[in-house]
Length: 386
Image (tube, rainbow, N blue to C red; front, side, top):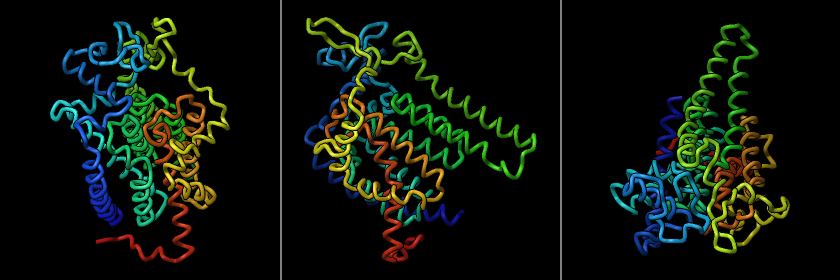
């Protein structure tokens, strides 16, 4: 165990050096102005910070220069409030307070680095460290993650929370996993079906452990205690989200997406429920999600083609139950956003499928393992480096 721990540190160090070598030139080449990395929703996440720091509230009407009925704000109990979750602005508040707008870019770079390292750690659960390393480098370079490094991205942030929670659960650190999974719903509500799937798997892991060896009452009580504690921690992790919804909209289960403020044809305010925007025909949505030249997953993330090939070898991935979970999570997010009417609302690729892309790395690793075994060059990359 100690050897693997030391080996991980060495691989992570090399990954960090590589990320610095590609992120720094990218950021320098794109930094035309201090705000050039802000795109789309990013302005409204920053508006939350401006409102908190300057006004001490979450009333955004005086913090956005655009029409408040443009579909980017919500109508709350006390006027126009954030439509988007406020967790990312809250977490990035110290960066903005100290460094201003550039601090938000630094915050996003840190998130991007953590995301890439989580891809490495997840792949280490299924593949050798050399294969996990190669897979991680490919995903850091040949996917949307490279482009979204230069951003203030809620999708990067929410993906970090979800992948972190998943990794802890797969490592049987259930309590830490519950905290991150609960917060991932706060960060992005469409994470909910993924989170509840992971929760069911966590329950399966807890109750399966030692089931064949020890069915004593003491073991039963232990499993029950772990399960109940994990559920309580998860619920507590959801409390900030529920409280925010209650303060803004009067109900813990009502979000800004359900009260999006837009204008009708007469210019009058119309409240739109975002849940009504999932109307794409499923097969058509799946096709364009994969193949659209501008936002399709395969044209903008060519490395995912290897993941599709790796899925063919699903039964050879060990541990198999965890590999099936990863595949199920990919399918849930892919099908969910294949139905989304505004699937194209990304400046590059499809940010709504960011978790799908990250998790697909496990199957890319499987394909690379097959290639390395077939052509016998696996041993050229030792587990121990340096």
